[in-house]
Image (cartoon, rainbow, N blue to C red; front, top):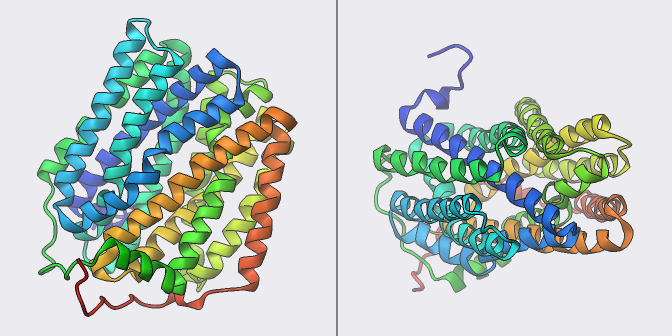
Amino acid sequence: MVPGVPTVLQLQNFRRFWIASLISNCGSWLQAVAAGYLVFHLTHSPGMVGALSLVSRGPSFVLSISGGKLADRFDRRRIGRWTFALQGVSAGGMAVMSLLGLLTVPVIFVLTFALGVGFALGLPAMLALVPALVPPEQFEQAVALNAAGVNVARLAGPAIGGVLLALLGATWCFGLNAFSFLALILVLFWVHVRPSGPRPALVSTRAALRFAWADCAIRRLLLDIAVFAALAAPIQELAPVIAHQLGAGATGLGLLLGAMGGGALVGAWILDRLQAHGLTRGAAIALATVMFAVMMTGVAAAPGLAWGLVAMALCGAFWIWMFILINTSIQLRAPRSMVGRMLGFYQLAVIGPIAIGSLAAGLWAEVVGIRWSFATCAVLLALWGAWTIRHPVHEIDGGRAPDPDATLM
């Protein structure tokens, strides 16, 4: 035991996977900062920045369920290697086009779409791989640390991306992202999964959909994250617009996104302490929804960069609550034969609404301005959170649902 180091990080398999994921996620933020900044710089249109989010997340509309099916049927490490390779080639192509001075808005959109395809097909497998890397008693800690790692990247990646973009240009951001995928590909050749016995019989996607709708806990969890993603994500996806509104350049954009990541790290720690003192996942999800809405109004009303940084950090604290709690709850509730499929539905419930919500918020910002667009999202999110508080689903904190008796192929 190493004092101060989470016990799950002392497991070599998980530690390697976590560090490689951290590197890759940092690279993805370099890419996101550079691409969003370039699109806004070339078009001066919040709607086009929202459209970039739609292009990035669009593949998940049609491929998330397929990604879940792949995760249930095939070696998740192999799925990861192929999908990360696709993303690396796409980011590399963007770096080359930028170096040659051929990077236009349509080119950014096409290569971003290719990155989205790899992400959509690979994410369910990577989420479902985590339980195979750790003992059952450390699963919740591994999921929480995995989400914290995403937000370490959110803290470091945008800040580094903003500085690199300002000093060296977009080519470096795209190129480093391409190389970052290599770390994960190599680790997925090295890690060993824990034996779990034969997998349960697979069910059809139609049967998985029926279960997701019939089970009140899974249904509420997917609705919660879909509404949250649609109304909360514009604060992240339209960050280049609010940075411009606050008079901040590329470095300011990186600082805003980095502040959100830093707040998420603190939020993850606070959530862990509160859960240790009895806060249930269901209650915490409802609380996080309402509190994020309150903090989002702070971003909308921010008079300058300093206040914007504080408000973004507070948003990040409750953002991470949602993703840790819902990801964990779905994996603990889903029947073993459907874990990949449920995570595919989870991905669809996150990515699709992010794309639609960001595009809608961007278009609404063209009419009323970015501040009123954010305020609109905050009010709607607060109303949903208040409704969930009045209508709790206690099964969210229950045990795993049993596997179906019959195989429906």
